[in-house]
Length: 476
Image (cartoon, rainbow, N blue to C red; front, side, top):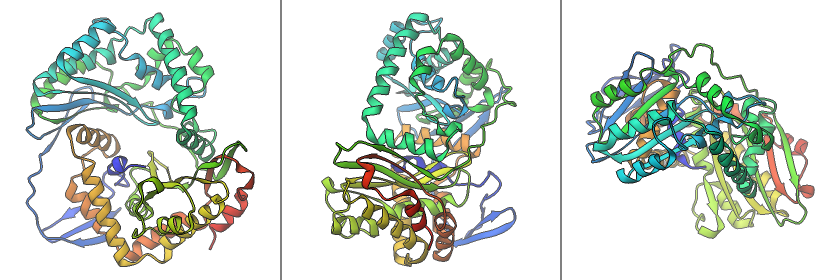
């Protein structure tokens, strides 16, 4: 999985690991207990300031002005499929689709023409914990873009014909997802890991829910979850903070601020496996994972480094012979798989950390055992050189993911929802650099050794070793 989600995974809570900085020393504190020390030389960085303001109803306005003529501006809302029930699962994603189908002020055609005439791009997406609406536009068009965003968030019509038309679109989208075996694997991985909890549900929802969701369901979800304190308006690129604060207050100031009764349901991780058997398939598509940490857990820094050490490999791209990843080297030498990709998926209070793989059904058992062997090496055999290489690669990848106003805007929105503040690049690097070898091995032992894994596989699964055997392999 890509590194674009990594930057939001740092604190145990906002105060928990707040760094104390002097000219030569960064320390990280966990409820008063010193975690690490890292010496660094003082630096002067030409980094744009992240400015934060809060309007009267609790909406936070956060901007970073880089002085370029374009910008990305949007709403990051603390609402997604995790806040749904079995009865309305899929409504958040349905709502995202309906947002561009006409408002009380603009028809769908007027909305599309207005965006086209600006030369802007309007987009949205739904995840398990967030819904995002954003626009990419010229700096001079920020006011009009915010006007459009405010209109679709607060005054969408949700006409009957539009709902029926979009219902068909979503059902077709569900068919496309079913043909994407990676999506299928990850949906089943969540289902078995967090079964009978909201995190186990899919983002799109089941077919029966999509067929019956109506206008009242959409309005109810907005009225329940689109509250001021749960919204961040983020802007990056060519932005004027004071101007954007005034515009947000004007366009969004009437939104309700009472979000006191909204709490995500705890989602307990459970080990187990799910196997979708299709004897006609020559390839196995699967993922093996363990429970990881939430966004705000300090241990996630170690898991991010460990994730980098495992890395990824794809036969079609070649290379990998000199990789520091044991799994990549062994996959090449023994032809264990066609490709694999490590991932670290985090939520508020839990997460999944593992590897997605595609390979021949006759080699899958061997691949799984070598993957577990790689996990064991993380706990016992990683060298100082390997750790430093992984830390440098992680820092590079994270910085490359901030190359553009949209990526920076996403980083701002997510971090504000996660931590209530923006974490600077120098703080991120200091946190990574503060991890020493002993601490790295200790945390890896804590999360990997003797932990029940979760496995989801699609293909000819009859020959895949039992879950009990895989679980036993985790005990060394």
